[in-house]
Length: 138
Image: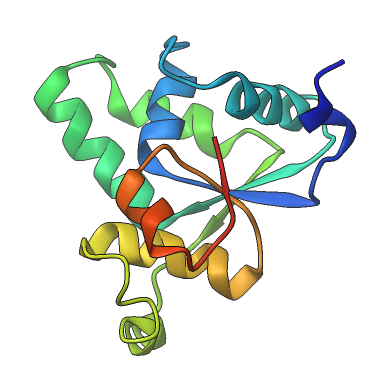
């Protein structure tokens, strides 16, 4: 058994690329990340997804045309019992200064969610990792 599945956190925040690679069953998804997604599918942990991730997924899909029916994809995602969504609230913008080590706005929102929840972030983003404001799992 993978050590990540024996030491699971109660929940993980999911970055956009991790979600895309999970949905596509892409080999770019690390073994650790894949193990967490599989554990979530077995109700062993919860995945937290910021609304900004869904927005980024939409725009990436428009560009790359991975999924022919985004409304169906969205419905499939929100129907998964192991996924919880966090809206982008206006007061989250007040955290931008605290999370300023993450240079890109969308990534700052996502990292801020993980920081506020004190949850690991499933991400391969080197700039988020370099910011060192949240624990990264990859």
